[in-house]
Length: 166
Image (cartoon, rainbow, N blue to C red; front, side, top):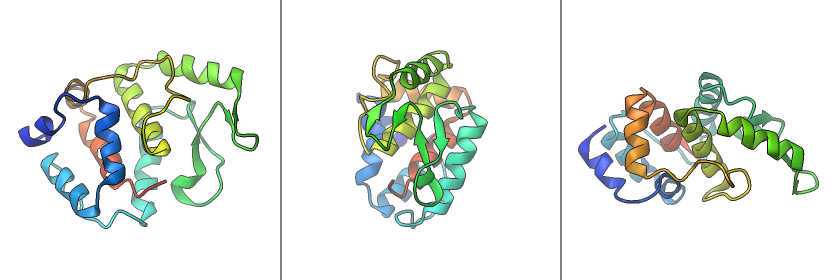
């Protein structure tokens, strides 16, 4: 990770840092990738396959299958949704959400950061549905450092950069 990328995190929370991607152009996302040490070229918007493949790899590699299901409408990553919610009735499933949060809390921080990043991308911003009363308020600089030390920074950055919109 380059010093510029680390400095761009500033004093903000990881959630704010991740959700900056939602408003970025493909060119800005490419610059972010390069400053983070990745050689990834766009276009990203309206090209869901690379994001879908990487998201599915992340869910598998970081063992996040108990938090996300593959039953949504549409193709590619649109099929992936967080569990613990009744999408037909548009309401939280109390027991399902309790289990979701318990599973999340039991995870080590790097897995939590990957799950939270997927939630923030899914929601297009901060979330108070799944990430309520669970650890998710890391400073961006501390989180990036932790991801780097765990060897997960590249996976995380690629997930964020490839995001084509949900």
